[in-house]
Image (cartoon, rainbow, N blue to C red):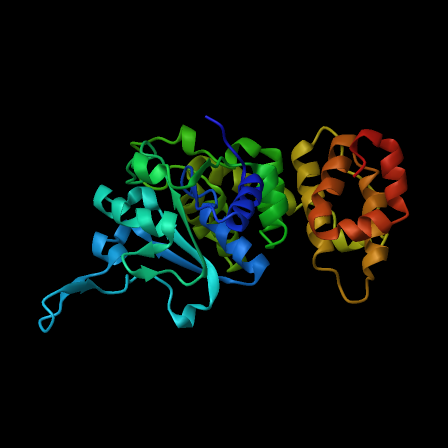
Length: 348
């Protein structure tokens, strides 16, 4: 089976929208399929209307038939899922979890996807119908797509990709840097759906969505005796236990402010990879929340200077992780030349 990551999916969906081709993103739960459409809508400054397709009956897609007692004929009402004037003149209509629809509802959605209409009612001219769904074997209550519906759209099989999530979502959306550095260290725990215990009670796996949820809880003050059960409720017991152990490492890191103010120059030993992963993540995170009295370019120069003191693997990691939000400043910095000469194969 051919697969794509979220970045590739977004690029393909944009081309499909421009070509007037409907698209459906399928994949395991929690990897960010719906977010792709939201991000595209935000990028294009258009609306995004998400409809939970699993709760739809056929009448929600095609409208209710109403008899006209005066003329003796009948008509269908406007489908409930169609956007109203309040939703805007242009947008993306997301039929979320379309694979969870009963076959009768899938049939009713066929003309919506292919012809942008249901009966005599048409979607507004600049609205695009798309869909998302899980696989029938994912334990998410999904069915197989009808072959007739599958033939009406570009179907993309999306798989989790930590680096894409980290660069395109985590850093831009200020996901807790301890989560990012932990997953740099233990990338295999980013998505554990394939290794989940189907018989286990409680949260059985970690996903992009569940790590984001944990980040929100941490920012809301999750700590103490509630930290382990709260984290386990988001990402599962195993990943939560390891992550909390990693959090303890951050408590013993040097003061990041002192590093940036050139008041601290020491580097942890190379035989402590967990500490180095934590330090690299903390250095990158600090660039996104600089104090007012620390100019951006001055901070960038110090960041590269200190990163170059780290073992090569962690120097590269820190610089590469800084690129999504700080590329322009990194490339203009004096220190980047030294990095480029040392790691020529990795020059941007």
